Image 1 (cartoon, helix red, strand yellow):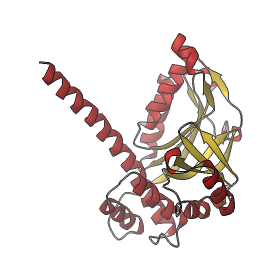
Image 2 (cartoon, helix red, strand yellow):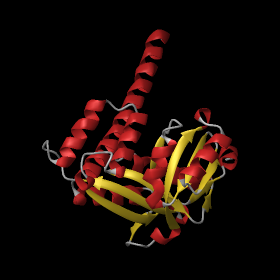
Image 3 (cartoon, helix red, strand yellow):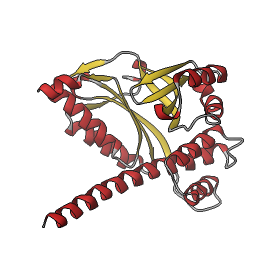
Image 4 (cartoon, one colour):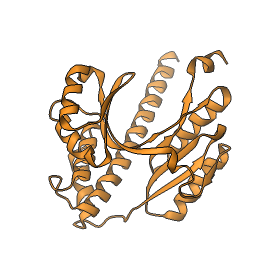
Length: 246
């Protein structure tokens, strides 16, 4: 019986990992498709596509998936038409949220996002209700095991980055939005990059703890689990030591 339970546990963990991997692939495929649609299928002439393809490589996405997504974006293959829509709102504890989506059905997506906020005790806001709390920046993520601070700092500043931040197990290279693709291209020649994308950086943080912190984290996870949601940005700060005590 214990062997059966162990196998069930392994299958459950593998199933969860595969499901997460599948969702990551879905989000990257959407980004590749819309980048190809807007800027063409040549990554050398389309920085957004080049970055999306680099993210696909970092996620170990099969090349065939990438090729099909590009062809769907350029119209060589029949595909779905996506719209980029951003939603703003507030979660528990007054935490500000920005949710970036890519969707083929606006009505379905807004209904789902509104429902997720409502069930979490939050609500959607009007356009620009919280956008002013965030600053648009380029963000490049490198695992610490793949780069020393000194070498990365030298390469990043020489490439035109603004700063290199220590974020626990990773380095985060920050750039101006328009510099992201150029800086990422240079950084990737020297270091293995986990992800590069345009980010929304909160200008001030809302401290949450206890049950409110748990509700906010659950809201983030539920939004990220939606197939239509590409990115979730929120201005909360959690003291995990206090959560552990609670």
